[in-house]
Image 1 (cartoon, rainbow, N blue to C red):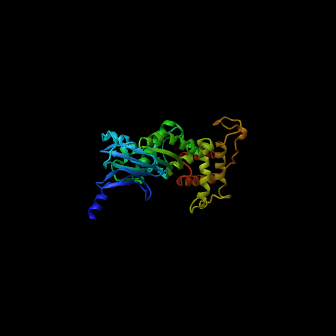
Image 2 (image 1 turned 90 degrees about the vertical axis):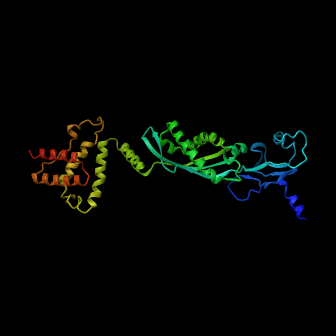
Image 3 (image 1 turned 180 degrees about the horizontal axis):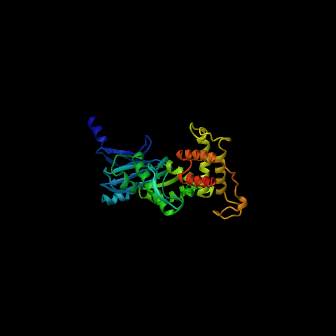
Amino acid sequence: MALMDFIKKQFIDILQWTEEGDGTLAWRFPMQEMEIQNGASLTVRDSQMAMFVNEGTVADVFSPGMYRLTTQTLPVLTYLKNWDKLFESPFKSDVYFFSTRTQLDQKWGTPNPITIRDKDFGIVRMRAFGIYSYHLSDPKVFYQKISGTRGTYTRDELEGQLRNTMVAGMTDLFGDSGVAFIDMAANQDEFGQAMRLKMAPMFAEYGLTLDSLVVQNVSLPEELQKILDQKIGMNMIGDMGRFTQYQVANAIPEAAKNEGGMAGMGVGLGAGVGFGQVMGQAMAGALPVAGAAPGAPLPAAATVAVPTVSADEVVATLEKLHGLVGKGILSQAEFEAKKAELLKKLT
């Protein structure tokens, strides 16, 4: 009885893979020194493919279905083994099963910002991430380049290689396209389609088919985003002079809230009349007159009249302006210009 059990274990009548668990892409049937019986049954389920390998050489590949293993169903293996007629004895061969199911919700992204040349902002560092899906379509290529003779090869083992390949391809795509970052961020669907077309041949080199690729976000690092926001604000304002006045106007209320700031210096509606007059003149000088060319001097009728001020008022105003220089609200150059302007009123 024991001898019969031993003999039965030496021959394989049924080859199949139930694909237990998730994420396995390639699985080698456990031969354990056993041989395949002549006329054995091979079952390849939907979303699977099977492949016979003889002494390291890829032989026959089977798509889903049920097969009876003979020289007719194993033509390449028959040739490799030099079978010139129907074989009747068991034979040895490695059998691999491959999962062709679509691998969904695979995530890709830039672990670190990538540096690209942008036609609007020059050299920038950007981030991007999204999802993609693929399936194994060519078992022979996948076996030769990826899984090899390993007993099991999983999706997780391949993830890093695919992600890094996609990031490299994305960097090349950015450089070759010449599309500005703003345009890419505003057209993520088109960007995803362009990436998929570029990445499809790279996946095919591994025996895979890239089914879909979605770009979920394209962004700049936080520090660059702040610079972008400033540039947008400057473009909205128009020129640097107006941008400076815009910054001062925004900074004054904040300075007034701080202890020892403008409020502590007495620059209110009453005590700050002199300062208000000076700043009013500066703002009037920065704003263009309708129909005038940018930077052109104001006509005489548009000049804001500044009332005569006393020496005490000038000194008080200069002290207040000097305090704003210390707080970074006014530059030293702006202070000197206002100082010269006020001193002229005393002569």
